[in-house]
Structures are given as structure tokens and as C-alpha cells.
Image 1 (cartoon, rainbow, N blue to C red):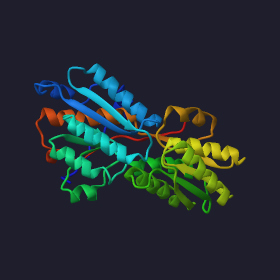
Image 2: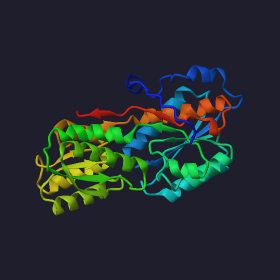
Image 3: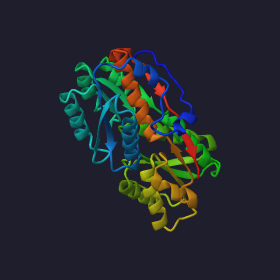
Image 4: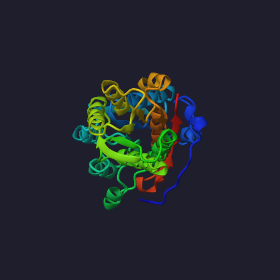
Length: 320
């Protein structure tokens, strides 16, 4: 991958609406190509509220900038439907879109089809879950990543939980799809926080980002480890499943739950204490930043190899 350029985006900008002008919007408008670019936003499961928020943010942005680009949005049925996501990208290549903004379901499996897109002259921008840098390098690919530092974000959540734990306390981690970089990084961030207080991570199991799977895994952990003090979920869907498992086990108030994403469904649980904390990584803004990164590259006639490596977006702790 080419040299990495990290740009920290102000949290205040993230709190603005998804239709707000971005730093280079004016420059793009002045140098826009003669034809209107067609951008495809390819996401993971649209059954996950996080990606619905992402899709809505992108659509709102296009609606307020109709002369700058056309937008196609696609998602898959569940978080592990990698084969279908690959087919969607292949369809976008056949459709000859100008850019693909991709939230990959798998950090390695999507790289070959990304190479096909780049070889076809399509600009590709990676958001949400980072494509594996080593696999990209092996294919001689440079794909910019627009998104948060998932390890830091998870550590913020874990550090907040750690204040309520003591050395030796047992905790479990509900990991997302284990082949995804963001799942691995969030688990690492949770572990960093637990290590700092001397808590013992007794189990790490995949809940595949899903409510039902998260519930099943959390239930099994609670049964196997009756002294668990907390469940750290890699996303809010799994946290919702964990809350149900805690209730079913009769351990409300005894087992704390944290999540990640700050979706709408988690807010009542934060309010009444069923969930202690989560992290907001601004789904709508990630899509907008990714789209604008692609549009800027098109307007400036840049090749894929000339694009910056990383644009780091904020991720904030949410406790209420």
C-alpha cells in the first residue's frame, strides 16, 4: 500500500447532517467531469440497523447533491453472505459504475473481486471494515480505507466498563464475524481494556454480528461461566442478544453488557441500564466520506494507485 496519510476529522463535523458540505466539496464542484459519475455503495447486511443508517445517509447526501453523482445502493441478507456480496460487486463492474464504496463482509475474500474492479478502471474506496492490508499488498492493490480505528473505539468502551470491574473478574467477548478486520480489532481493544484492570477474558466466541447468534453465544457463556461479570459485544446487535440472555438467566444487575455502533434500538437499553455503554462510529458519515473520497479521485483524474491510504474518522464513547 502507498504511504499512509491520516486525517482526523473533527467530531463536530460528524455530528452535522449527512448532507453537509465536506472540505473538498467546492473543489469537486469546480472540477467535476463532463458526465455525472455513477457511484455504487455496497454494504453488508441491511438487516443490521447500522447499515440501514449508512444507506439512508448516502441517499440523503445524493438527494441534496443530485447534479454531482448518481447513487446505487446494495446490501446482503446477513453478515456472512460473502458470496452474494462478491456477486453484487461483479454486477457493478458489468454495469460500468465509476466508483464502488465497499463495506466488505470479509476482509480477505473480497480482495480478488476488488482487483477485478480496479483492473476495469473503477475507483474503489473501502469503508467500515478494512480489507486485509497484506492480501491487498500481495495483489499490488492500493485501496483507501475511510473509517474509524476500531481497536481504539472498542478500548474506549472497555475502559468505561473496566471502571466497574476489579482484578480477577471474569468477562466474555462476543466477537463479530471472525474473518473481518473490524471484529478482530474490536476484540483486541476490549482485551486491552480488560488487561489494564486485570480482568480475565474467559471466552471469545463469534456471534456473527447477529442478534439471535449473539443471544445463543451469550447464553452458552453464562451457563459455562456462572461467575461472569460482563459481556463485551462487538456490535449492538449482539449486545441486544446478550441483554436477552442475561434476562433469561435471571442475572439482570449482575452481568453488565456493552456494545458498539450506537444504533437506535440500543438507546432505550442505555437509558435504563441494560446496556452500560456503546461506541458511535457515525454510519451515515462514513458513507458520505467514502463517496466524497471517490468523487474527488474521479474529479482529479487520479488512478487507484495514487489515492491516500487511510482517512481516519471519529468513534466516540456513548453511555446514555
